[in-house]
Length: 133
Ligand code: FES
Ligand code: FES
Image (tube, rainbow, N blue to C red; front, side):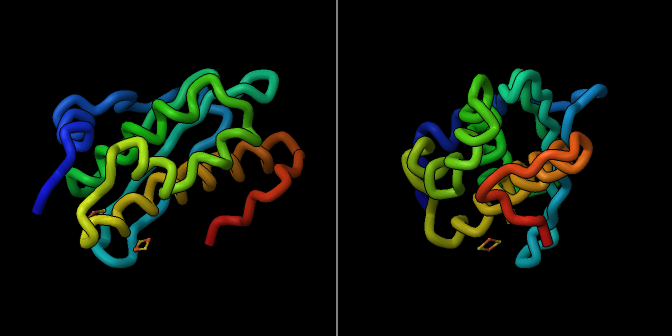
């Protein structure tokens, strides 16, 4: 199995690991295929994602995609963050081995769940965001 240099870098030195105690939104999701779990914390002010952190109980590909996904959403508006799909994250990582593609879904799902939590807490509707299952 071949991992890109970027995947290895984000796995060995993951960015944004941890929690945000006063997070605006928190999302927790599980990967049905492997049972791994991911939690994403977002700090949102004036519709901008000021900070993003994550905790993952999962494989190296899940760690690398969460690291990259949290890096990509920081500084973006809530609407722009919706464009940070698992495909976009994988592209930013120069790809993942095919058997590891499902791991990248966790980051997108946890991000969306955190945005949903933020929207619910603030009584707003984020267009294009689906309720997490
Ligand atoms: Fe397998 Fe998303 S968990 S495709
Ligand atoms: Fe579970 Fe990758 S094997 S997230």
